[in-house]
Image (cartoon, rainbow, N blue to C red; front, side):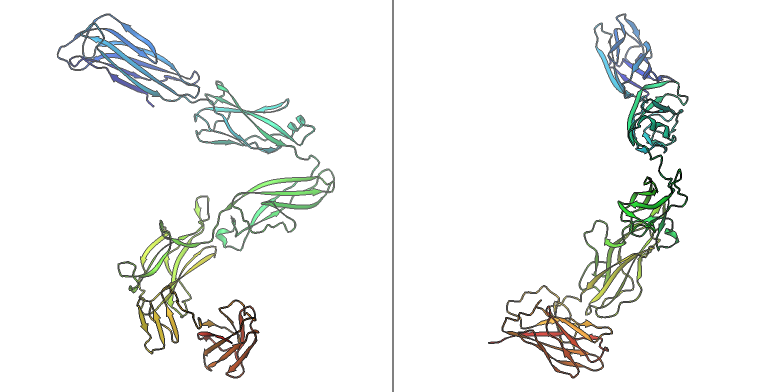
Length: 586
């Protein structure tokens, strides 16, 4: 949009015409929706001759010929051929574009030079339209929303229902952004217009003025209808106070947080009218009704959540009040992939961070995701991303080492973890952990395998590794995807940790024992502790189990593919691998 402009015509031997226009001070008439421009046509350009006899001048602005002359004059550089002013009318939306052209015969009698240009004038602010008018209960504040077209404009609202009406004073929003007016309480007297209904359709009209005094109106009024509800005049008065309930720290005490807070209502100050007494209270949150003690379940919704309070008096009249609480969205913290990645990286690497099964360094490329729980522009919740690791089979440390501190602004990290050395012959368990100030946490566990080797025999010869180093005795440990081309005469069960119990339950590889088959399953196992336990469990085709081996051990039959073994003491820590052999019976 332009306040001025110009163009040059084609020329003769360097001499041409220049057309220029501009909007003078006060040139825009807001109430008239018009703009005045001043224009000038003059000679321009350094030429071979000091002047050229010129004529047949013509100037057209916005389709109208504003100057035309056949009189020939001496056209010099700077000679003003003509000037004037034009008033241009804008469209109903306040916008206006126009074009202008000029022509002349320079040196020649016939027209031999011409030019034109087009511009968009600054828009003139016009009347506003109502965007929305919220439904209300009579006796409550209105809520009418519109977007002012000029920060200095004034507005009036006229509310009407039947023969009742009310017009506000001049409202000056002082903004060109969306504005909501809630400065007028629609009185109960308006209910006189709808004697046979609890609801009515009220009309609100918006009048726009060019000044803050409301003297000069622009355009016509904009109207919108909304629903008004008449309260039960004989009903009780209800006073409801809402407060959050949670076990969170003081930083979150006054907040409603999704899944971590409840809302509690207090009806202190409520009273029946005209002799009636209140018999019961209730309140409704998210469509669920609660009675005494008027406390909701954990808030599952977020955003603006409606809470209704209800009092019923001795006449059976009920009065309802509605409030809204802002429930801050919350999701538990999580370990997530690095920005743009599809998965989290937690693996062996070389010192430069290159992933490699032969690396002795640990690379972590991940991020944290958590809810910041912000209110009033202040972040209340912070989150830590940490890690811990241990050789497989060992005990993980009780604490985590921080990768991203709570105070760090970055939410992702790509790092070769310092002070961590991974032996090539050992596998490791790494846990990534996030925890925020609410106490919510999440853990992801990663298995870091040994270096890749085709075949490895454990030093004592009691363990075999395929595709990895052998780490355990009496274990055939395969680190590659495996396909068996022949039948397998056995299965393997990893160690099972037992704490404070003398009952060992073993899940067989068959979900249920087929009592109709001619086969039996034999389990042979041992226990590594102060006193070894070893022996054999025999399960026949009827699902009956028997034991032979260490004394004071009993077994129960197969139920759902599980054999239950009772040991002589609870002091067993770790059970060794259990193998099973399938024997066909003729």
